[in-house]
Structure formats: C-alpha cells, structure tokens
Image (cartoon, rainbow, N blue to C red):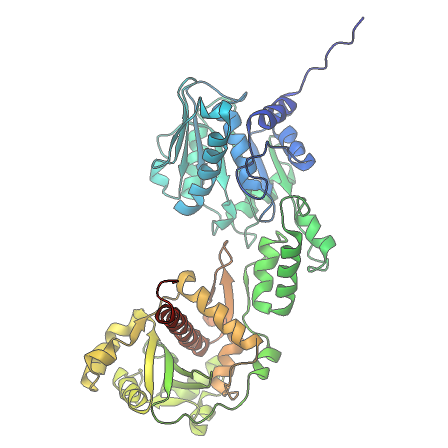
Length: 510
C-alpha cells in the first residue's frame, strides 16, 4: 500500500507559495525565483503554525526584512492567506519609508507572471488591488487621521523603532481598527529603538515576558558584553551575514566605527541591533590634538569661508573662519554681565578666557548683534569672504545691523542659510570628519573651540545621516557647529568650482 502523502502545515504551505510565485525584487539576484533561507522559513512557521496576533521581528539592517514583509503582504493579498474584501496596510513614520515596502511588493508583482495577471498596481496612491478577491493594500505614513475608519485584517508596522517615546497615534489607530476583525495579524519589523522607553522597546519587553502567547518576538541582537567589532558578534545580530549582506562592507563599517567614536553608537544600533541611543562623541581627544597646529596669519584678502552660530541673548555665539589651507580662526562672544556666574554654572572658565583674549564680551546682559555686525564688517574688509553660513533662526535679528554696518547687496548675498538638521549637517560633518582624520585642520588648540569639540555629540537617523546634538546637558558645542558650517560651504563651493573647471576644459564631454 502506497504511503499517504504528508499534509503541509499552514506555514509550509505559505513557504511553498512564496517560492512558487515570488521573485527577488532587488540586489545581485534580482529577477530570480525566491528561495527562502532556513531562518526565514522558521519565522513563517512561527507566525502561521500556532495562533499569532502580533509577530515582532527585530533585526539589523540589510537582512532583507522589508522584502520578507512584502512576501507576507502578498500572501494575504492574493495568496493562500487571503480573505475576501479585506483591507491590508503597511505603516511607517515617513512617506519615504512607507514607499519602500510598497515599491518592493510592486516590483515582485511586476516580475511574476502569475501575480501580474491578478494584481493591479496604483503607484500614485501606493496601492495594490486584487479585484477578483476584493482585497486591497495601501501604504500609510505617520498621519493618524488617515488610519481612523479603516478595518485592517493585516498590518505591517515598518521600522517602528523610529518612534520616539512610548506612543504612536498611527500604531494605536491601526491596532484599534484591527479589533473589528476576526483573527487579525500585525507584523512589526524593525531595528531596535534607542531607549527602553520607546514604543518598540516596550512591545519587545512585553512580548519576551510572555504575557500573551499570541504575541511572539524574534530578537536578533548582539550581547553588549561581546566584542562589538568581531565577526562572531556581528553574526549574532545578522543571521544573513553571508547571504544578503556584503560581509566585507559590514566588516569595513565595524573597523570605521572602531576608529571613529562618532560612528560607534549608530553602528551598534543599526548593524548590531543593540538598544543604544545613536549619540556619541564626534571627535576623540587624540584626533583633535593631532589637528592642533597653529593656524597661519592670513594675508590681506585671503579667500576664506565662514560659519556663524548665533545664540539667544545670553548664550555663546560663535564665528569660525577657515582658509583654503584649513587654517581655523574662531571668535566667541558672551554677554559681559554675569560672566563669572555663568562660568561657575557651566563649570567653564569663561572669565579667564575673556581676560586671555579667547572670548569676546558684549556690554550688558544680552548679546548685542550690533557688536557682531561690526566685527563681521572687519572680517569682510580684511578677507575675501566667499561664503558665510548662518543658522537662519536668529538671522532676522542680525540683518538690519549688517545693513547699518555698511554691507552691500553683493556682500549680503554671500551669507548663506544653513540648516541644522540631517540634510544639511550630514555632508558637512562627513567633510569635517575627513579633515580631522587626515590631520588637515590647524586650530591651534583654541581653548573655547576645544571645549566645544570635547562636548560635541552626534545623533544618527536610520539612513546613517548625522547631525550635532545641542543639549545643555552635554555642554556648549556652538564652535563646532560653526566650524562644520564653514567646512560645509567651503567644500560645496570647491566641488562646484571643480565641476565648472571640468566644463570649461571640455564642455562637450561634460
């Protein structure tokens, strides 16, 4: 008698469907049929072979977690997990992040002859529809108002670790809306959040505690007591290190983080999937000292670039001028009134630095922009200022004084607004970091600027863009902000000049 064919479990059936109908959407194997890894198969069996309300997968970047989410989404849209006339959603904190999962799912559909014939793609609306089954998927970003009134049977919460604090209106709206469905399923896929108080951390800790056996958590993270830069440690957070990830690139990032303190926290969070706030010293003391050569006395009309970090009325204001040879000339101001008290409060010798000439004081209790405008007039008279970056927040207060100081319209055009967020600051920090590592700066160990360097910390976003963190708990960093802005505009103008020179040399080729 022939042996009876073994019946597939729900998880095995879903694995078979994905491998039969889905194709790899990106990377070096683009267009090839999906072959799920043993780890991915375990995840799927964990979701579908036992009752599951919420499945949390926390894993480092580049482990194909978003593609995995897309496979699950298609299972519920047009695969064996479909429910007629059901709503499916993915939720992310930004429109760009929300578009990533939709884009991957759409690519898979377009590549698959089986799926392309039954699924309609609406790119503008970020929707996938299976009209035969009445199922619809839509990507949402963090606008909670769009989530109320919905009734999802399946939700993917993408990169929930980006939520700061214990609450997210979008998360709550979708989870509440799912309550109307019988056996809804929520998938949470993300790298870890920075702190224990953030929403994802709360969810992970509750799941691990085992309060609800329908809430499951898979956490791939490197133990904090392990050597963070060893391959063995990296593998603990990256089960697909030798599969999807470029191992040599990951090792390079580890070596970079070991050399540069500003990279370590982001590396630990995004590569090791550790619960660590992506904030760390920007420059080590040893590297700063290596750049401590005395700046040259600049000749009259030397080409220079500047960064101006204007303060509120009673805080430190910083101007940093850099030459094309990276001589660094800083100037700092504080109000004269209460200087000794401020020195005691900040535990910084402002009064001594003022007597030594490293710190300028302005009369009274507040920074007088007239004084700063007068100083800038002298800078423009002495040097050929190509561009001076400023924090636009306080600039409206300074501009009238610049006009009174005799700045021409042409001179005023050289003042460039410079954002303090990730978009503007990240390229500037990258250039500044390169200069520091190469020992190219000459800052002369100016004590106020050195204090700012010692206090300067950076925070990273999920794309590993960086910006300075301005918090009084970390001390004054105004001089480093001004230095970064000066380096940023200098590098930007230098690149523009290279492009122009190349065009003039060979306009046809360019």
